[in-house]
Length: 308
Length: 204
Image (cartoon, rainbow over all chains, first blue to last red; front, side, top):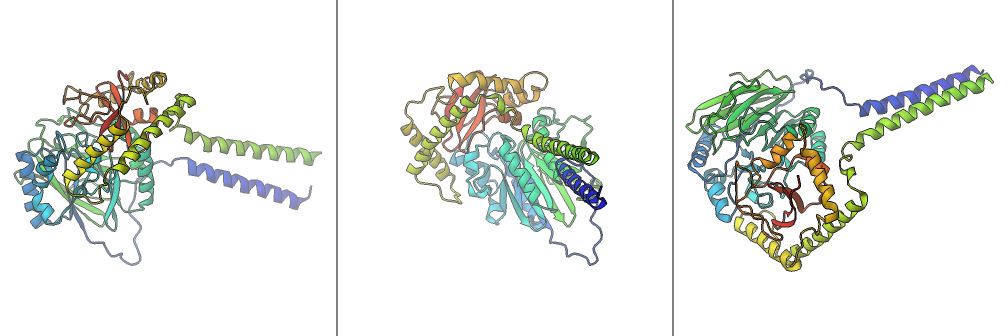
């Protein structure tokens, strides 16, 4: 046997094996590894300016509590100038006539709208999608689900959890994959984790959505639907919040023995304000009477839990 | 002789590895389509053809009414536009018949597809999702829910949440149409005109 020819033959086989193994490595999902902080840079990177925003959920009642929360939100902005508000669905209850838009959104939030504060809505089970998605003040761009990037380093994904079809899942995967290493914040109506006695977690939704969120390093998820506030202990490195009580309240709605609750509050309506600065997010959840009922700070890469 | 047998062995190994890689590559794409694969192809094609026929009507209706400009802030214009769409579709489709799209020969397949996702222990959550809050006939949030073909979806009624597994089991719909439930009745809803296009009673 010609040694050279033999070597060439075996070399070709080794190359082919390497190529096939590479194909398999791409197809085999790798286990989720805890994300670690980026290695220190030779020169410090300039931090993008902090991003401030507010969160409200299940608001569209047109009732006194909605107005009271709206007023508290507006007055909070004087000390904490948030740039926009995300809405966690059920933006309008009991019909969507032109008067409903006025009474359940335009009038309660008139002060903020006049000040140029943008609202980004997601859809709840009481919302009429094709009226709300084209309503400019909701900034949905004619879509049931969409993404926006208010500042470098932070991207939001608004989803339609009422109708999570394969098309939406494919869209989300593509967008998450393309978003790189920036903060990824998802918001939608039905919570994947919840200690609510009435609704509880949306397990069907969790099955299809959570793997994507984990795979692509989503940092924070806000959801509504349950009419109370709950900060969930981080699940698979994702920080979950429920805030479905910005106009409606289900008193004693939280199962107090739940093991996933980091903080629960079900005795008054609330809203939240949050700030993203570099790798940290801080937040305050404020009640209708102005009391701070929860607050904290966590890092993107290594989340150690809230400080209070 | 020895050289030939070595070559044969090498070739055999390579062929085996290629076949293994091809199998691994192929298996991932089956998971998302296996549920829809239970619908016979001819029925699926017929369903899609009927859906497209309806969407042609919807498109024609949209062309006959003044379009909404981007960035509309006046909710009255939005509501009015939807009503105009509904009226235009009714004019183009004056005598809808139940079963035009959820045809009698597809009915069994569709109900089997839904039932398959809501039965037993595995389907408990999906069933609770469909029948729970958001369903106009749910005991938690009962709403006026009279459903008629070409009729407006009840204005004050919420829209049921449709579980992902049910959406994956039913034929995919293009933009402009969606599945919803009223009680246990599956409806086909025109999202642009907010009207009921077809009805499948007792879907599970």
